[in-house]
Image 1 (cartoon, rainbow, N blue to C red):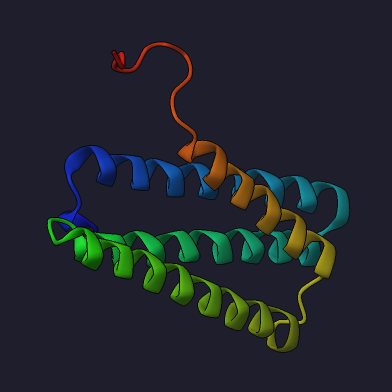
Image 2 (cartoon, one colour; image 1 turned 90 degrees about the horizontal axis):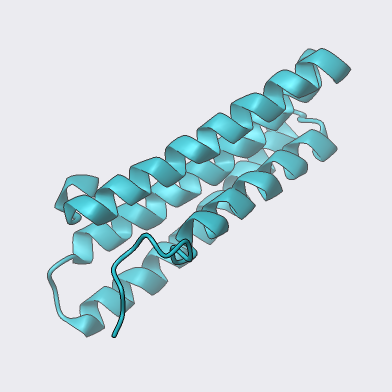
Length: 132
């Protein structure tokens, strides 16, 4: 569970997933307005695929918190591997079972993935702790 993570890391994980959900919802609403229900549903599914991948990865790291660096590295790679397999399975389900529209599905996934990576960038505003 994410509760095992230190508070600052847990807070960041929740914030990243909340940002991903907000972006997915915004894109989905825009797709609804411009292209209709199918595009909106497909966009939302693409965003949810990204968010669930983030959750799987965070949970994997949470399980290794406080363990040896080797155990943490193993959890990192396991989490990333599980995330990739889960993402592929969800894309298959979205395309084959839900018959999702491909462009909104992949666009929203890509944008929410960018949100994930941007959120992981170090704070360059100068507001964080100073290295010295």
